[in-house]
Amino acid sequence: MQLASRLNRRDVQQTAKCCFKVLQPTSSINIATKDNSINGEFVRSPTSFHNVIAKDSEFPPEKDRYHLYVSYACPWATRALITRQLKGLTDVISLSVVHWHMDENGWRFAEPDEDPDCIPDTVNGFKRLRELYLQQNPDYSGRVTVPVLYDKKTKKIVNNESSEVIRILYTAFDDLIEPKYKSLNFYPENLQAQIDEHNDWIYNDINNGVYKSGFATTQEAYEKAVTTLFKSMDRVESILAESDGPYFLGKDLTEIDIRLFPTLIRFDCCYVQHFKCNIGTIRHNYPHINKYMKNLYWNVPGFKEVTNFRHIKFHYTKSHKQINPLGITPVGPIPDIEPL
Ligand SMILES: N[C@@H](CCC(=O)N[C@@H](CS)C(=O)NCC(=O)O)C(=O)O
Image (cartoon, rainbow, N blue to C red):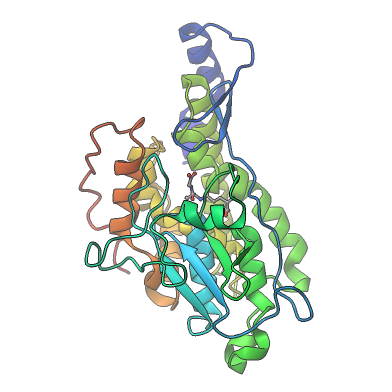
């Protein structure tokens, strides 16, 4: 059964019309994320740093020169963490993991012994991620986001856009790693057109779609986002049902898997209740997605290692006060992910 069809578009529009006055377009800042909101619809702001790592450039590939600042809660940062693992770059690029709680001053680093899974800022000794952005420009007023790929030598942010960071990691350090990792390219030329095409709708409807659902500030915007999300979940389910797997495009693990997994793994344990993405759950309604996700998590080294359900559940439910004012984290589902 195509889950999205359970909530019929016309019903959605009619519900929205009869419950709410038709308003002129209004634009505002989303208080949770400092992103824009137009007519209640969440609009993600662009990131600010877009350099690359390349030979003979300001940022040449070197072992232990670059650092990754991440949150285990963040799906965008998780893309970078997965790629760092898959490409065997854990000894080449060092890591800081922020505390799961994001307050009105943004991400912070944990105090010693506060959380065993956090890694402090061993590079600059900062207490807040904001300080890293202010180090670049004391007047910086944009969003302070993870992931950040940082150059320890020049003390400059190389790139803070996850879709670009992962592509840097696919190849930039290939001369510094073992041949078995060097040969892995998750965006090979022959598949690029196909990958780009799928990235487009998966990003808009699913990766960002869960946020559009959760951060919508009107009933109409929410219902539009959540139905679009589940239509695209149905689409992923049919693609996986027809494919021989185990990956999205078949035998080869590609960027699509690296970008899809971080959203899927947060779905049942977080997005279903916290972002109201509850037309269905992966474990009950999407058997092919469930099998695909479980295979990545349990069988493919690199995915489980960077999945921290505690950080994920605590971050969303205790940081977004406008969604969950008391910050109580639901216990279920149990288990966070089903066994194979
Ligand atoms: N387009 C960015 C989005 C990054 C992003 O939004 N990260 C969130 C965490 S999931 C963040 O750091 N938010 C902090 C804030 O908005 O203050 C990317 O893909 O890297």
